[in-house]
Image (cartoon, rainbow, N blue to C red; front, top):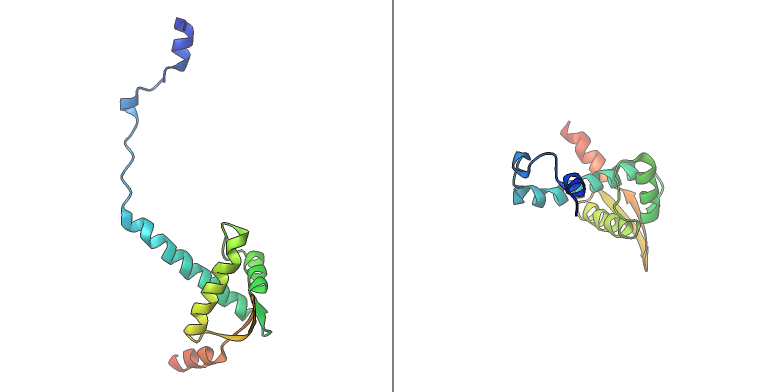
Length: 121
């Protein structure tokens, strides 16, 4: 390799002049999924509030993506993530599972939660 080629491949700034990257704390990476989960549940809740009709997982997905209230990493896992989030909302009484036939489920928001929340005010 000639002197000119060597000069082109050498860095202009010596490696010792680059700032050191701070170490990431492990606790930050553990908290991220919890926030994403809470954000997805919130997006599902909003999607249910937008309609009085029973809504499928696919319908909830359409409403969430249309509104832009949550960004899904992959399309295939989006329906599963929504189904799991909706199951948590059903367990807490925030939504009602109206029916399930195989993979098809229909959800509706729970009016009971709205009444309980209005009593608190």
